[in-house]
Image (cartoon, rainbow, N blue to C red; front, side, top):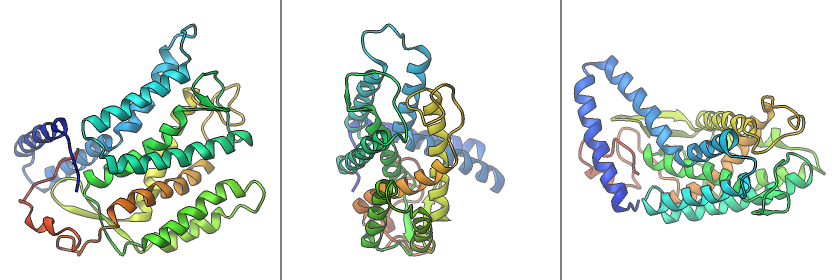
Amino acid sequence: MTRTGPTSARARTYLHAARAALHARFVKGPWSQAAFEFVTFGIKQGWACLFGGLMLGLLLGTFLWYPDAAPLARYDVLVLGAVGIQIMMLWTGLETWEEAKIIFVFHIVGTVMELFKTAHGSWIYPEASLLRIGAVPLFTGFMYAAVGSYIARVWRIFDFQFDRFPPLWLQGVLAAAIYVNFFAHHWLPDVRIALFIATALIYGPCLIWFRADETQRPMPLVIGFLLVALFIWFAENLGTFARAWAYPGQEHGWHMVSLSKLGSWYLLMIISFVLVAAIHKGARRVPGGPSDEDPEAARREPGRDRLPHL
């Protein structure tokens, strides 16, 4: 069950009213309905990205306007800003405590990997700061948390349900193998090609059903993974442009992040997906009807919950 605070409940009421008014005004036929659903999809995706969008805004804003002579280091400002965003999202009910716990786990998973990767020269954080562990500023964990936050929120906002959802234990084994390979490939052969094949075999048969407006739409889950990884790669390009971190070759001038990082984010994002799936127990869907694991779905009023579960 999703728990929401009073602020979230009020905002949701306003959004439902706004959606109904806009739908009545602009939707006159199937083409306008398709356009309305497309716009709604984009708005809800942006809303699901709230944590990541605010973090990216902090990275770019401090890069462009934060004074070099300020007494507090830019990276430390990013830490404080990230903590403020997390508190706001919990206080307003935009994230549940159950989701926050899983996001925190991914935060730790990411920070441990950061410590290892920076020690091996995979990337650097070029600016000084106080709030850090070794070479890793503490704001970096919140970048991983932003990915976890997105997956947790998009799951609720689009009312995800699945056909042929893989067993959670099998997904857990895959996630563990992905994580181990991020470390082990420095000494052992890199098996990411085998991991890509494993993701296709495990998730290939799975369909994800999502609801942008009135109707639930299907998509192969693997395609969804690829699209999310692509947008994380775009965000990483903005992050390196803002000099939040730098890969080898970017120390003296920015250039696009290698497309190989797209594959890395694809695999890393699956770890976050599995953590969030553990909350939901992989709810399945009966095509053409409500989920067997969601008995309340059959009692929902027509048109209810078309807008975000805030």
